[in-house]
Image (cartoon, rainbow, N blue to C red):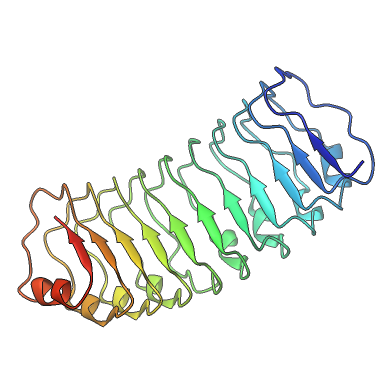
Length: 235
């Protein structure tokens, strides 16, 4: 057996696992703790612990060197271990949305091969100053947090195609946003933006810019020209 799928089984305790697993799915149970013995299953490639009652992880998760997809969403985590940043094999998907996280650990920025990061519906107030480690990131979802600013290093995410920032407290964007040459979608709904940096006109691949529900937004003169050049702008 290499795959074990026990979603929606009403489990309250972590099951005993057979050796040789590459996929473990415990989605939507009532599990409140993870045994340290889980990290002995070093062949795991996909681990889904979402929609449970987890509030902490034991140390040692860095042993899962083969994991490329990790789902910890919809739990009760207030923090997650820095060791997540040591998962060099984590290339596809890291999902930590709908928890109670207040910090975005700088250690996560070492995930240089990660393509998708979902960190929505938490309480994060700021991002680390240096995001440059996310060299392969294509999609970053941070909507419904408490961000009031983005670091200038956001512009170093050269592979980024989608940036979702809805429902934060942003009043401005850094000029470096214009360096995201691969960006296709930029979602800025429900913030406190007053205007946009002119550097956005350099985003030649941007096809959707969502600005709805920014109550005090003053549209810059160049925005209509940008729209006529092919970007769909939602106001």
